[in-house]
Every structure is written in structure tokens, then in C-alpha cells.
Length: 469
Image 1 (cartoon, rainbow, N blue to C red):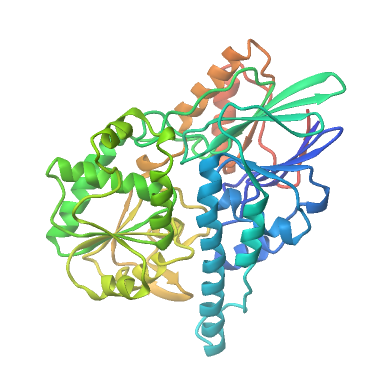
Image 2: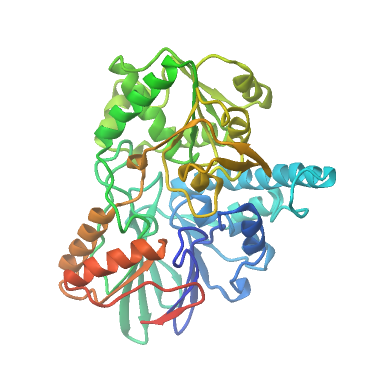
């Protein structure tokens, strides 16, 4: 068996990993690269995968950096099955359609600006359209957690809960090559313990090889309780000066977690009297999908439902879909909280809100998730004095607040504990750890700590590398 690394190798985006066995080739995830607009366009034009040679595709979860290139597989000739959990399939119906719409909308906007000479960019074309998305959805096969299924000659898959986002799964691949069996566990994006809404991540048994994310391999998250208190402080401060809190948020999970946190502050009378706008048609659709899958909730969230109380609604909250209502938010000068996608500020309605509010010192931009290098979100985190929004440089005068404690990714402590548990459960079988979905710095720190714990066979492959198992 050999693993080939195409994306999310020494970086945190564009997840694609090929598992080559004696009898099959299985693709784990097929995500879009997310970063600087020009670089993303160029990198996403090329799949990096020979679609016609694939035996099966397995999807860990619905985030676009893991699922967003699936429609391109169909365009390239892949007509086989795509395996995922039921919630992931339901989420992809909304998220992939939204990705196609955003590509079309952004292409039309950018091309119009290019024609006017207003931006320093080349004309762009969408990677895929709605018909490509519909074909992809027709290829998806829903597989519940803990149900083993043969997906290719000599390859069986079992999903276990990753605790990262709704429907997120760890992929357990049992590979039989002429009587020699190997268990490869791909964590996908691994969640944190004790986070709201979802259950904690599981630790599958019997791993020979662990393919593990490493996003936060060099840092620890603050407890979620501290994040709630800090959030209340930010809201009070911005409300007092009459500004708006602009929150770039991934439509899947992070937006729901922020709404959940705001609802908790409301119950505790720690919420200023300012309206909350969830301005993302996709987030509205995704929140509806959340309501369809209570089977994956943790005890706290199920208790709310048992009291007939929605985790995702309260009287100050308004979900916005229409463009007219979205524009009205920026036109209104009163204090408000705006939650909008995309989470790295590279597409979607958040760009319009940043364009309208980033130069006003009364406002705050609240960063609640990881920002990949070269994205607008990363430049805001770095507090650069001038940033480009829609290709036009603007002064960054708004307050910038970073709260990575809301992250749905495991931190360094979580990752180390996960490997410890995996080694214990495998009874010494776990012989190799391969780090993906992380930048070189965090991977180096994590590798050193794993070595001190006696796990010496640790690799962090680059894109294009292959590792024989």
C-alpha cells in the first residue's frame, strides 16, 4: 500500500490523499484550495488526480476545503461512488450548490471590475456549475457511523465520529492485500472535547497507520468558557461606542457555535440590546440541516430540544437571505452583530460587510477561526494597515479581535492525547503517524513532542510525496 499526498500536505487546505493498494485506488477527500484569490484560482484549475483511475472516493466532512472539488471529479470522468455520512451528504447539497453560485457571482463581479480597469486581476471562469453539483450528489452514498462497508476490492470502510462539524467522520480503512491486513485511520479534521452542540470525537481501535490532521500542533486553545466571557466583553465595548461587530464565519459549524454562544449570553443577561444578523443564505440552509440531525448532538443540546427550545434561535436573531436585506444592514448606522461567510474572507457576503465597515474605528472585526496564509482573513489577523477588499486597498481602522478558542479543531494537547489513546487501543500495532492538514511549524512542534513520547516514526509529507506502508 502507498499513500500519495496531493493537497493539505504541509498546508491546511485543499485536502486530497490517494490510497493506492494492490487492487484499488481510493481518494480520501477532494477539497478546494483556499488562499489568495489569484493563487487559489490557478491551483484549483488542476485536480492533481487522475479521476478515471479511482475505485472509490471517501469524504470525511462537508467543509469546502475537503469537499469543494468533488464536482470537478465528475467533469474529469469519475462516475463512481462517493461515500460519506448522511449529515455530510445533506450538507453538501447546500454547500456545493453555494460554492457553484459563489464562483459564478464572483467571476461576474471580478470580470466586470477587470473590464473597468478597477482591479489588478485576470478574467476568471467558474470551476463548475449547478449541473456538475447535481451529478455529484447523485454519486453520494450515505453510510452511518460504525457500519462497515466494502468499497473496493480488498478495501472496507467504517466511519467513526470526528466531533469536528455536523456529520464529520474519521475514516477507518481496512485493507487486505493477499491476506495481509492493514488498518489505516484518517482523522479528517479532528474535533475538540467538551465543545457545544456535537459529541466528543471517538478514538477508533486497532490502527496500524494514523493519518492525522495537525492544524494546531503547536498551540493550545483557551477553554470555551473563557471565550464566552471574552465575547461578552467585546460586544459590550463595541456597543458602547456605537459600532458593529463583524464576524467572518464558516457557514458550517462555526456560525452555529457563535449563535449558540450568543444565545447563552442572552440567557445570562450579558447580551447588549443589539440585533444579530446571520447574513448568509448558506448558513440559513445549513442551520436547517442541523435541525434534521439531532442524533449527533451532545447531551446539552439535546436537553434544549427536549424543552422544545431551538439551539439556533432567540429574539434578537435574524437570518438574512435576500441581497436587499443584506445591503440594508450596512446602510443602518446603529450597533449590530453581523455573522457572515466566508470564514477566511475570500468570498461571499462578508466581503461587502468588510468593505462597508473595515475603515470605521467604531467597528470590530472578530476572527473566530483559523486563517490560512495569504488570505484576507490572515492579513486582518496580522493587522496590516491596508488590506485589499475586492481588489481595492482600504485602511484597516476597525478593531481586530482574535478568538481562536472557538476553533472546532483539536489543539496540541488533544492531538497528543488522541495518539496516546490510539497507541493504547492498538496494543502496540500503531507503527506510523503521518501528519497532514497543517503548516510546517505546527507539524515540527508536534513531531518533536510525539518523539518524546516514544512515537518516532512520524512523517509530514509535502504535496506530491508518496509514502509506502
